[in-house]
Length: 306
Ligand SMILES: [Zn+2]
Image 1 (cartoon, rainbow, N blue to C red):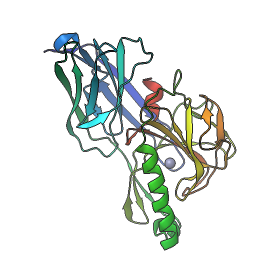
Image 2 (image 1 turned 30 degrees about the vertical axis):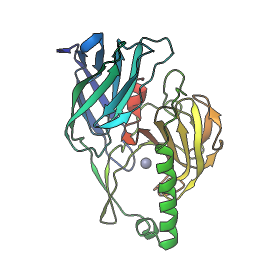
Image 3 (image 1 turned 30 degrees about the horizontal axis):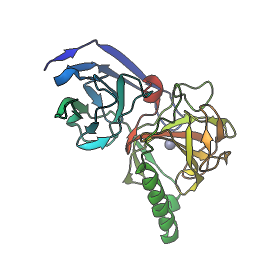
Image 4 (image 1 turned 90 degrees about the vertical axis):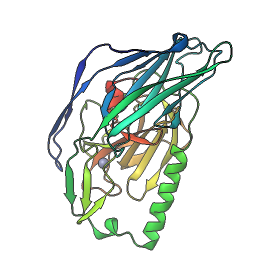
């Protein structure tokens, strides 16, 4: 078994300067890796080193449609798919949650040979700590210390979101490329920002904020099915789209929602308008990407199409 460094590319991720934050520049060196395993199976990853909140693209070749297979990322089973039933290559996305501790993790692929023998092969991924700024905010008391009724609502919202992310639709619902959900915008900020609200540490900021005027149309980043379109306590008017295989995008703080749960949507279809609903300091679009429960930087799915 050998690991070959295929090529070295560098990726510069720029974050825009936002009214509430500061400019952030981060450079990550990516070294794709490839491993030749038994019975002609080849595993590829776009990088063996990554950081918290990132997305890795995995490819597997040499497995016939008739063979059984499965994949696991850090011991957890993850979906693997073919773009078309006849496609020779299998794909998977490895989401590195923005709070996943730095360390070494295994991506493992298992399959059964034509004569029924179970085999497996794995690649090691190094996760580095992300460089996230800390934001100190003072907000209205009700959003830091919700009263019992509000707390009940927050818990119901969390239950709803968990049920959504626990569901993996075993189908490719996307078509073509993922796009940024606002026209003419390519950068956003605040992803991964650690937050201290009125002196109390809170969960990190899991999405990207795009400053935009209230009423600016918001578009679906990709085709899929709307699985949530309603008002939530913290994120205000919120839309969640299921793109299949555990990939979800979330759009928050909308002033208006123009879709309903259950609706199929096409990429770039209007789903609502920018607003300032929920816990916000002003109008903007909050855009989130979740891959099998991992909260990752949504701009990476635009830069590295699955
Ligand atoms: Zn946000």
